[in-house]
Length: 375
Image 1 (cartoon, rainbow, N blue to C red):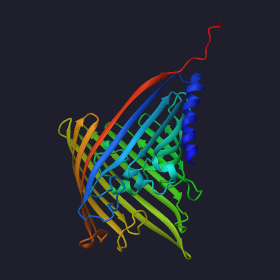
Image 2 (cartoon, helix red, strand yellow; image 1 turned 90 degrees about the vertical axis):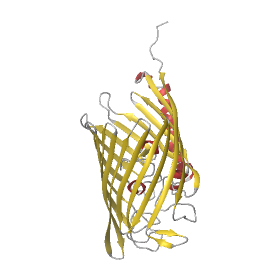
Image 3 (cartoon, rainbow, N blue to C red; image 1 turned 60 degrees about the vertical axis):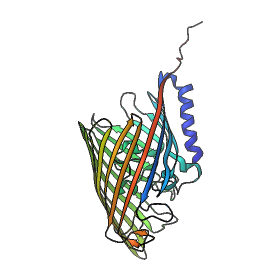
């Protein structure tokens, strides 16, 4: 699988630069670097240094690298490709189930435009998930930490994506993927995602439906998972807000009985920019996973029902350097956190400080023509 992902990217670049000049006269190449560093402190002081229920920026009392990524993009009239290898604690946490070099891929995709007149694209490889309004790149998010919703839904997928513009403001996407956040298929059963994106003035509205069989060697009793997610982003001058809700069901087979478990979440986040450099962000959320379908409790408690409240200050040092300070409090109905001094507890308070720097360049490569002068 890993050789396929690397090979498809190299093939597309070579084919487009050496043979596709009949189709494209020029191509845009973009190379970006991204370094996300942080320090986090959890008042429960986890003994292993890993904060529970967190993937992004999850280390405690540790000056750490969350994500260091090189992002290479190639775009021409009919061909596009992206290759983004990365390292850091986010990759260690989120890709632990993957094999070898696959643990270091944020995206590796190749795409072809299927229509000469319309923006109908088919992309294949490791691709970003359309679920939710957050992704791995913290500088693009309203807050530095990710919501519980983002941490317990797919950041990435492996498969194919068909993008179809329905109108000027409405786009439809269909995904056929290996499963719920997995590059290597664990059960040889494919999953499907249907996504709609609506972008009227000042708004971006997203809705996704996921369906797939989740059984694997570690969870042979699991059956079909269905997940619904809807979110919206609104921007007006110095104010930006995002909110979302999702609901999932997981079927399983135990003994002679079919069991259906449910989980849901709701969250809202906002940011107000006082100047071009200084802004204030906040988020409130609620996550309910009574049967631990996606949120596995790390204490003897039997269910995950947790709220979280976050506030942060953002300071743009320059156009490509962002400093942030953030504090976040978790409150649960049951004792789902562990404190070495107090035992199992119902709450947690986390402080995060981050410095993120991005840099890059882009340039155009002109393709030679096949025409001759007849001499």
